[in-house]
Length: 117
Image 1: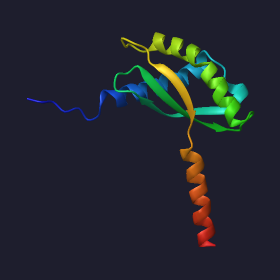
Image 2: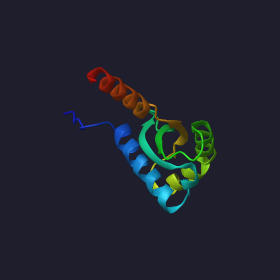
Image 3: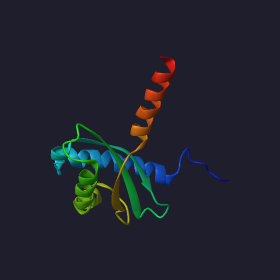
């Protein structure tokens, strides 16, 4: 008898990591000097050792490249606090990426508005 779960373990771990990273930014690590940053999604490798964290920025206080560099410098600190909050054999490595989906969506909406005009 095979039991099918509604979604994979990697999906559940990704959602948990995203939630914990949000909590870390409010309690432990101050990144407000970079702008208002939200974590949009987390992709984790099948072996649960590496994660890609995608973020979006509102009210940029610095350029996108500088924000990405600063966040990746803080990756060790995020990993430390993540390891304290999540129960896993190995705490995944974290790499931050700017989420381009929102910019692409805004661009497509702008094109659609221009077509309607």
